[in-house]
Amino acid sequence: MADKPKLAVPNQSGEPTLESLAQQLAMLDERLDNIDSIVTNVAERVMNQPITISVTCSGCGKTSTYTLLASEKPTVRK
Image (cartoon, rainbow, N blue to C red; front, side, top):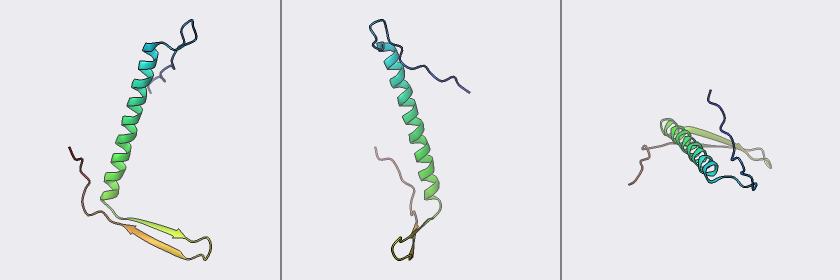
């Protein structure tokens, strides 16, 4: 497993250095890319099979069922 990166190290004046801030920004960018990949993967899997959502009313106790179906795979417009 990779070592956890260190946070910005303040210089003598107590402020983080430009290099450490750039490193943290790069780490944040990488994490957001990973999250995007996970969400995209989940969305693609969902598009291949129906999803059923059941909701029960807290007032009357009636259950409503909703089924989500996908007719085509989403594409990225350029």
